[in-house]
Image 1 (cartoon, rainbow, N blue to C red):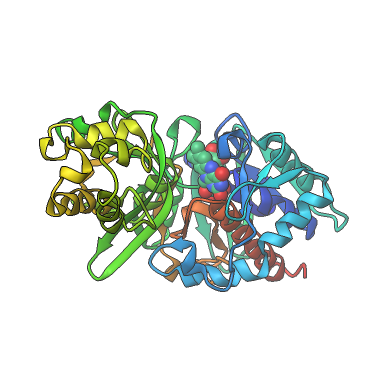
Image 2 (image 1 turned 180 degrees about the horizontal axis):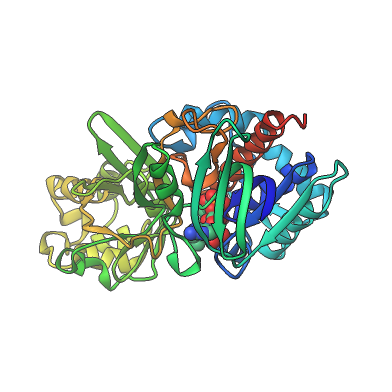
Length: 416
Ligand SMILES: Cc1cc2nc3c(=O)[nH]c(=O)nc-3n(C[C@H](O)[C@H](O)[C@H](O)COP(=O)(O)OP(=O)(O)OC[C@H]3O[C@@H](n4cnc5c(N)ncnc54)[C@H](O)[C@@H]3O)c2cc1C
């Protein structure tokens, strides 16, 4: 029988980081993961260079970059272990990085640098901590024992034999990309111990359309352009200004991924193909001195392929601009500034970058991520109902929640 202070299930971003901090705080840790490769999701993230945090994040206002039933829950962990803290760790290890777009930090060389750093963090420490890293290793059962003849503890049955442990951290992530190890184990453990799980759904994912309604755009596959994209639920509208990528099945690129986290089935999206431009007024003004075809004028502002698709089957717009009635120009401007599109779904967990929903934050301590009703059981990272926007926020939540949990564990187990 192996004994430990803490058993961490899942050696992804949150689990691996938590293991390192716990070990450095003097705890005896068993870290297990059923997938043969360590932190595979980090490896494939950010196009192989991991967008590992966002330095523009305002940790005190999580609702600006996170969603879930109560994004404010994330504040405590985000404020105590910030993007700057993680950047300092990268600097300490000499891992090179750069800022790409809107505060997003990426590794210069490869995600592997980040994984190597997290593994090194698991090996350093002077407080007598220990770390057993079992991978691949499956968990078969987890039970809690609380009787008068022994201290309360958990018993885990694993591929490598039983583990008796004082605390358990569930860091199994969400359901996205099952091909690299994602499972619903975290949600099943939460349910087993009586914790509520907010229904999971794919997020940061490409949107698909019914073939007939996508016909107009299917020939534009590969086209990318900046747009404003909006979805509305009740009185609440969410808008992103980002690049949109047209694919043969639907919409992808940052604009589609961001809005997908807020989109619900049956809702339409409103796309403004020329954000920041008063197209109606511009067309009327142009009409005063131009005799060019309307399509040629539009092509100064939009990719020609999109213009051709837009004007196809619309003979009223196949004219010189000075011959086009104002009403017709206004209708064209309206169609481009408020284009309604109704997705029929998403590309699902196979392609989604994250899973929204998860273990309800109402069940967890904001300070330590420990279950309120099941002492010694913790949930960190993506398995929790906290989902970041695109841009490094999901990794920062993994680091911050892992750090808060490790500190909480060390305090609970009298190591602080
Ligand atoms: C393609 C892609 C690109 C991404 N790019 C970015 C990015 O650039 N920036 C960003 O912030 N976020 C990005 N994300 C999201 C980010 O990777 C996750 O939010 C983050 O990895 C979550 O960390 P986690 O530790 O909670 O879960 P994970 O990193 O998913 O780790 C969970 C671990 O648990 C293990 N596990 C699962 N089930 C079991 C089981 N039954 N038994 C044992 N072990 C189990 C898994 O094998 C895995 O190792 C991306 C995601 C994807 C899919």
